[in-house]
Length: 590
Ligand SMILES: Cc1cn([C@H]2C[C@H](O)[C@@H](COP(=O)(O)OP(=O)(O)OP(=O)(O)O)O2)c(=O)[nH]c1=O
Image (tube, rainbow, N blue to C red; front, side):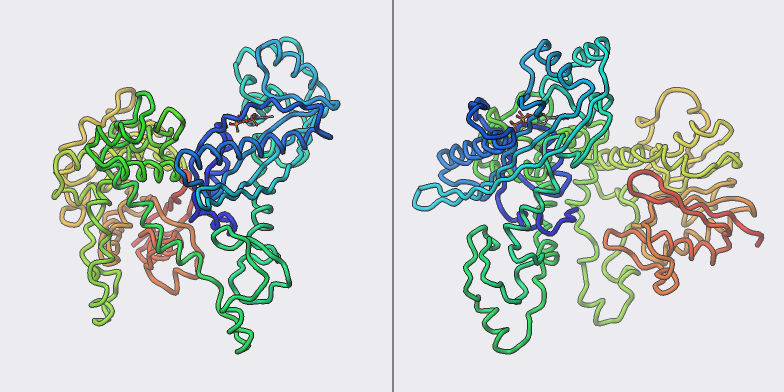
């Protein structure tokens, strides 16, 4: 997600981060920026004595790092990127500049110099806008620095050496990493924490705002007068002071045009990111780049039997999306790709990606007729919603079906413990997980509650594949599997019914039907645990029935309202991991 409007300005540009620092990559990626990584080859050896102050040195180094990359890319491709970002972090204490230690002894002398004292961390940043004209590279450099003051505790010799032996100091300015073990050495921080870690995100956004919205407004498009201040237009060129045609019209008519629909246009474009992901997964790019040495685009193309040019573009897009990294040696997987996008990653979601790639979202099926017929678009008029992907998998090949089950299993594993502990469920002695698939949540419940017996109730065609997903270890005997259809067959008896991650894929009528069946089966005092609902205001529930969000989920308030109508009292919500919320309702007397 991109919160900062000015970061959005860079989304349609080719942005390069001229840095090998994993911290910088992570900070910018988490801010929603899309970029390629091309580490700079600039040797950080500028003569420090020539600079009036430590930050001046950091800024110049940052600039040289970025310019080196811009020039190299221009020479190689004859097309420079639109923007190159360079940064340099240094520690300054008593007028001395400390960079990365060259060896353990150097780390020792740096850290003992910092012990018990305050020092400054400066990060210099250069934003280089590039433009190739007639084979020539033009650059326009904007630069700034940020200072953060950090105070260390007194460090004992033992602590110092133990820290140095951890290996952490070696690739970090001043010989410490505040974001990891080094945080233990720090007593106080004044200023931007991320600046110490290697990139002052806040100042960076302010600088971009200065460059892209020079008159202080967020979006330069609405025609209010730019009082004689130039700036950078959408394409990074200098904006002139003359009014554009739009502004001329609006000053004639006295009407301002509406704000530029940046969000809408981003949405129009965003399918490209999904397409790239679908294609890369289909071609098994991430399997190819799994453990081995990095590969060049032509080698990947050769192995895939695809064109070198198209493969290069696909790989660069994956770099921008954060799934691949690119160095001089070639492309390799990021941690995210290894975990989630390889066929056998520990939390592989590749099956889910392929499922979505092969089954375009039903909502696009017959929208026009739904509009004409006045049919409720949430009740299947826009094409059949076929329920959770793992239940809809009968049309899949064996390989795809297993991949999909694996993805469902990965997703469930990621949140199972959070879900199991979101509420105290120790009062229940039996539970039934409806559509519980491979049993990942059932096993987490069993691990948390030693007297709880959990039945996973799912379609026979799903359960025939779950044997390979069963864990070893204690309490596994508390979990059993029962084949059945929760719309057709009687629900197994249980004190607690669990409905996790399945409702979003059903239309409203089916959701009503299933939850009504659960309400009828549930004994007074029994519970219903509902997982994967979005947060949302209570008022919505009253007003809009079971309305769905764009992603298919309905809000917790909406479900709570429905559960109360079905006879559940004391409906409570709790967080259940990073995203989903869980609801627990207790069945009142009929
Ligand atoms: C002080 C401090 C520095 N650092 C890191 C940030 C930088 O990556 C590094 C300083 O070295 P830099 O030369 O700024 O950066 P780098 O060599 O890692 O990457 P590149 O030159 O390719 O851009 O120290 C921390 O991670 N934590 C800290 O607390």
